[in-house]
Length: 125
Image (cartoon, helix red, strand yellow):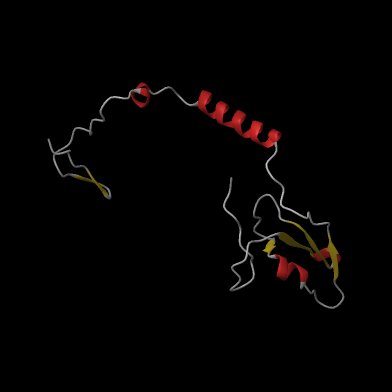
């Protein structure tokens, strides 16, 4: 599940509840329920900014029906998520080292050597 999206308006920290898109060819602004995914050419708005939306003169606002409460994940959504996880797990190559529950061994390296931004240290005995 994704993070809660915030309103696209400057300095607004409210959670987004609606998505605003424009149809420039028809001079129309479309305001509807929050889109499933954030789109680069759409604006997520909180309830206050969605209600007070104004458009330029000559433009039309098409307001789609907004749900009274945000939709909760249903059994079909959860089943689809579980199936996706199972499919990803079965497609992953088997790695026997990953399944062993023994003590982790650090890679063979000199004490305190650096690899990129990480440092390998041995546990004190």
